[in-house]
Image (cartoon, rainbow, N blue to C red; front, side, top):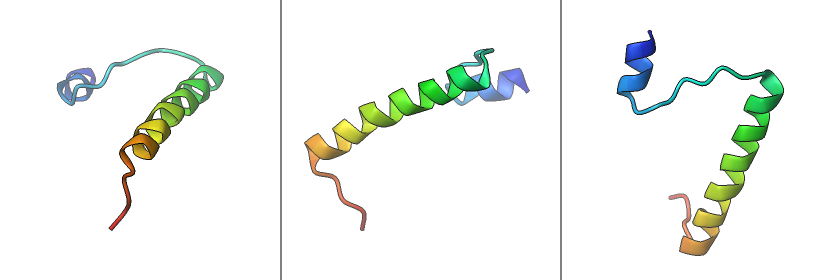
Length: 43
């Protein structure tokens, strides 16, 4: 399973549910700014 996950370019990190939620929130904020800056729209 680990190899399959790593083959997709993902990293395996052991952390708590709270740490995972914080990571997802931080990534969301980064990509939200990218979408806004590039003026991307859904079709």
